[in-house]
Image (cartoon, rainbow, N blue to C red; front, side, top):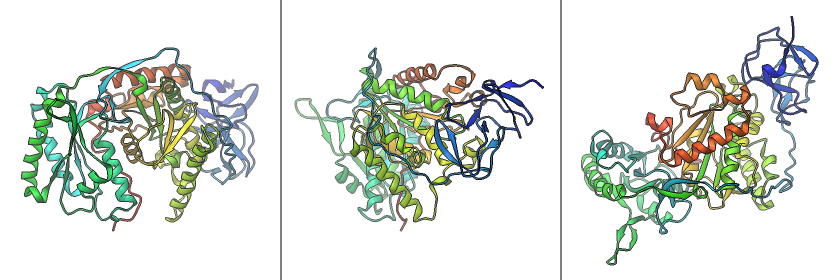
Length: 528
């Protein structure tokens, strides 16, 4: 039997790596040639999984990306399949080396633009420049969720919106929280911050608030605590735009669901002509705020889609824009690579503080952060949280980490930012969009179909079989990287797609109508 060159069926990322990532399924017994060294696949190894290139003794580190992804739990021979049955995520020391590798800000060779919405100087960044033009019906509590949806249904199930072609839609922002929490406590304030982030979002031209009336999460608390106003629609005697109080409806005060729906429909009907008058205009790309996430990941996520997204992130930062990554539990084990890129020690320490908080937070529930790779992730080849994290942070590119912010906190610094969010995709992206992301890119190796209105979500497949199988949901195929296309080429393709989508091109998730039910604020405390 003649040997097959390893490079034809697998990717060896770094010289120090003792494993390779399989690009095509390798049958058991396949003879492989790795730079003159012969090895035989002991078992079948699936796409995205790892194949040992060298002997790895029990207790020795397993390396991928040139970094530790775990430790051998038993002796591993060359040609062995390397996965959860022979690798464990034991603790190890990380050298944070704050700011040691902080790069200079990249400079663009050509300044780019997009066709977006300028909401005017009465809106502060990051909520001034939009890529969509929605009206939102925001529920303060789950008890008003159905009523909020009934209001939007009046517009979305009739031809009324066709009279207003410049309005992208009337969307319901509903959730499962809003009551049975400590009044003015951490959950209450975080929910208010999240709801306010969607109310004042640059992709939301106008909104109304809908509550029940007796909930803990009162609209008055939200309005006063977050200083919420309805901007841009009231005018004084001289015709100058100004602030107006938000339109607020409560079911108990209105006299029930039907009367609340009627009042909500009337309020939105009054807003529609004015929202329809807003037009797209040419804006510098520096006004784009990119929210990034990976979900349904596989072993190729950190090889194809995430590094390519990192290239796009760098290109946007070079334009003067903002790129955000979240999912702190999926940074765990790789945080030392980000602290080295921190613009200051203070910024680096903010990330480490969040990592320590997550160790405490999971510990009080008897959970382990390494429980994070889901069954689907593991089936796709991801073995430990360290491996997943190293692939996940590739979305953030190579520029300096300029800030670390709390969940749903408005992003203000230009450049690459980390937001503290859980790893659960809808919860993570909800916080990132609330923080100001006006366009999102979501990478997936297993087939996530995520959308998050009001921000459009571009879906990137990590491998060609997935893209071909779910082409109706995937916008870009990064699997071509495994077939020889350079990462930089796909990264530039993603960047161009971001500009196109920001200018109005519909994503696959928008065409499918996905994005309202995925609003999922993070609740960190007890339900009382």
